[in-house]
Image (cartoon, rainbow, N blue to C red; front, side, top):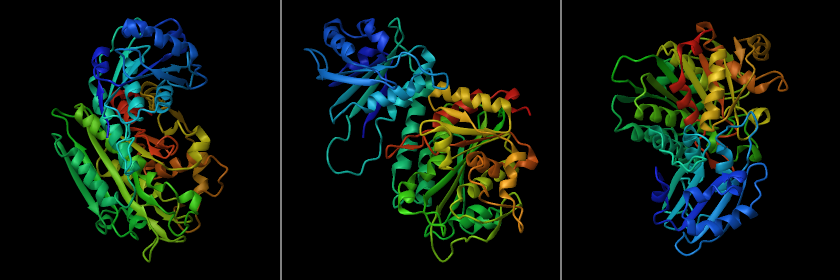
Length: 494
């Protein structure tokens, strides 16, 4: 397990390092930016590396053995000089990409020195780097990464960047979320995830945790969450974390996360190629938990709830079936036509509970909801749907600022509600036409259950970026926390 440090001084990051990684745009390297921040004696070796490396679209890395007095191994990563308009100006994905190409081995300490265009890019760079040092590991061999990794950053003129106060907290929460996603379901059942949430919040002031478990869900009208998880050996639950600020809260924000600790597809069972890696289907709950911890630890002026909708979509005698009709928390009835469209059922209960019982002024849900999201916006960028123009713009800006990029989905209820038409219930749970914007439709299903309230709402489908290359990423933690921090009254207006 690698301990990550965010250093104000480059010299502090270099102290004791046996590996050095320098990341900067190719043009900056060609101009000798590294000479402004690193010892002059190392310059010739770095010059040669900078000359050899070709960045390509995302960036590239070359390395060599360091000169006397330098870390034993040094690498230069050339980041692209420009990014496209839908990309983040922080170059966060290129930082992650380049750092992931370096074989950091199991040394004592790795130092990462990054050139930033502006001080406010530091958070995104720190989160991107943290993704290259995952916490979960079950292999018994070596190469578990260095014992420590230190990140330092400097501006084009060589001025060192002081880490933002929330950067360390966010990095810790991102790594926690990634570890939860990486942990296999045999160790991360619904009760285990609840226990993780309780442990993480244990020492936080003004935070309390409650949970509604098993058949008690029915007493609270949470019929969707109960049905999806009732066949599992460990019962489903709605775990609610609440943070109250010291002063009167500015507003109440509820974060709702899909927490399917494993998704077999239920009786509409997934085939082998589609069931593998379904431990990642609680990525929304992990992101929501991480964002909640970040906001609580940085003393948000808002009252914050995190609702973890935890279930295992298992197969057994108690499995819910196609043709069943469920009554969800909203009071609306849902005819089941696909038990593998389970995430929207638990989310619908969660957002309705947040809006009706907790009286949230804003509801944000996050979920690895649809495979179609990867077709819509790819594996790096999430999809966002919302019933407010201001919230859509805010989410996109927050993604560019944090490096957790997101892109708008269509929000057109009059086009998409018809996809769920049922002859025997208020709606079905899966679309009639899979060629009609399925990710937008999935978000629409969730919104159907709070539509009557016209409550400000954001839906994040993080199916692509939450789990990549066989690893959880902690995606969504920084994005959600940033959205909440930046909310102004005008964002909530219809």
